Image 1 (tube, rainbow, N blue to C red):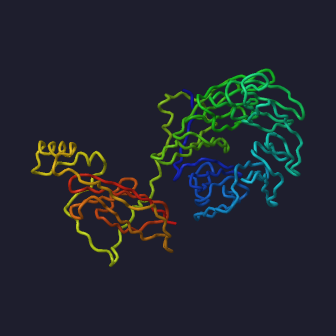
Image 2: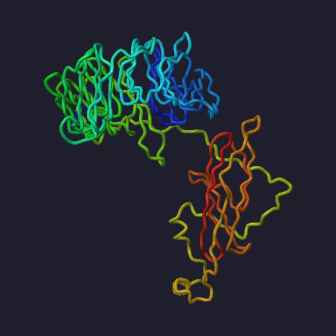
Image 3: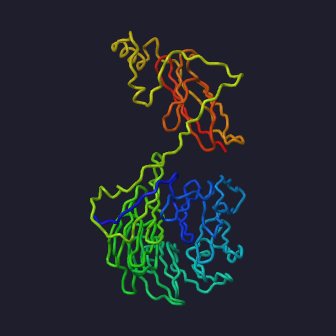
Length: 485
């Protein structure tokens, strides 16, 4: 398989979006943080966690809750629950154009912020002069200055239609539609090229078109199956099939890069040129000098953050075995060991005595394979198990055995950034004597063997699990999440 060299930068949290900012790029992490990347050094934090950034205007960050933040403030940000949320935002030269939850289209520039259009369902595209929006059932081009309509596309069909993609061109617009009927004038999927007033050409297609782009290799469309089409007046010709829907596209000047599934493909006018692989499904691409930046998430909560991939666009294409495409992936960041620290119990906490020495199992298999106590033969154990299952044994369990840690909790940290938290277990269906406790963190580290646990926790979200063993050998488990703000 043909590929290009890739360098990887480990991230503390997976990034989903990339913003352009002069000679740098800004990574938007899943927790709302932003990192600044200059192309040569590890990305550095420039904005603290909080509401998701939607756009960047100079050093001002527009956030999903309608609030703004300033680059350089790395302290945690609170969500404005009463704010008007932002639906989508588009970066245009000199500012941002964005749609809010009320249907208002607004612009943000160095001169300030203003509203110039209302009643909008979808903001499709924008440039320095116009916006392309859907207002009710009408797709139209409006002036970015006055908000007045300069072009409106006639709706088609008595059964209605859905605009699945639309973009501005220098002399009109490109529109992909899906009709709600199956025959005649209401074909399921079509791509239309409009001039300043008239329809110039139209092509039918089998799959729903999800994206359109005007690039250095021609006008492109991509559909939900992963097909990439080059559009001309005469035809819609497939130049590549990625096998999965395209999630991002960027123009390199003589090639176009598309992100689909776990790959980024470099396409020329006639088809595939090279491929790189990312451990996440790429959701954003950006060009910085001779580098292509790639970020994305694999959607698996059980794995660590996916890295930033940096493709060397100046390097020659070379052959590699497909199994080696992810050899560039860096190891995850080694975070500081933040195992919650134990503190001395408060005077009002009664001391607890451990029933006997016991090492908590590290997992389910260890618990199941725990050695039988001396003096208990295998035959006796099997007879007891059979008696319990048939309810004929005198020592079968008489009532359910459970442990409850209560509801998830939120606490405030003190001035030093930590909070004291007391975790208590409520055990039912078991005698007080003879219980065994094993507290652990979300990554499996054991931190206590008593029924109560007093911890000092730093700011952040922490999850703990408690496994309790009944004297008769049964197990019960519960978990609790503690958020320290």
